[in-house]
Length: 342
Image 1: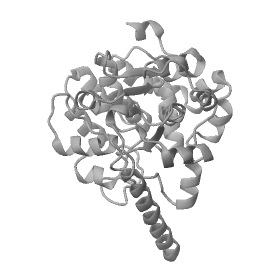
Image 2: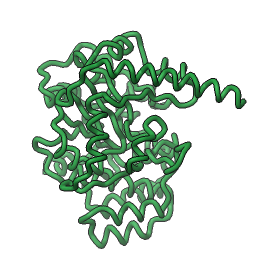
Image 3: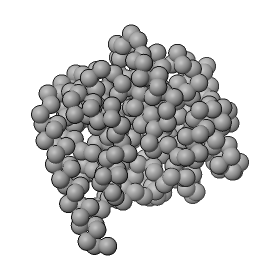
Image 4: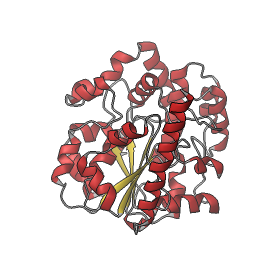
């Protein structure tokens, strides 16, 4: 077993070294870079795959995941990092500048190097990866620093995905993927604890006494994950979005094909590439087997959380969301359009 692990690690290092060399040969301008953010299991990979059909684009996957980018944790980033909009953090800014310019790029290799690499590449995406010199950066860990990122960098566009909290929490409970890692190597995936949540709440400005009291009272895993979802999306939904980022509602994008045209138009693209429509209908590689089938049937896909969560779990999640004064979501599978417009 140890021999197999050693071989796997050696192969990973070789592949990552070749990848770094490839990116050093590219000339990526951050003004062309597109950033995609959202809570884990919100559809960020799906949207990344769709937008990567833009001419000249390839992508970097999860630059704040310490498994692939350990230097991100070494300089001070964490699974959820809150940065006030007017903060000054030269190290963090330089790190993200390297990411947005492709100077720091890694492939998402975990266990089996060849299998992990092949899973993410079709022939067309491999060609894009080799020759394209514009970048999409996808992250499930940047929501809470988004106002700061938007002020620090001039990117082509920032796309923020928001999805029903019950759907997000249900998927996180099922997959165990909620964007949290241990703070020391080997940086394994973990669920956030109440202690973690309480530490994060102390960092964020402007939370009401009611919110703090509700968070102090959480006890179940779904309540903790619901509070994490709220903290992830609090800044996104409460700050003005004009000229800063484009908010994409997962449910709207899935149901309304003209939402695909709006998504591309926010990036200055008049038409949707033909391959974009193909990717729109195709589940991402991180989609569960059940969801891959249901994704072709929007009604089934969007209501999946109603069967995977108990009624008590749903009530607990929505109670936490309501405490944060987020009025967009209820027992309905789709968000309140009137609240979104307001």
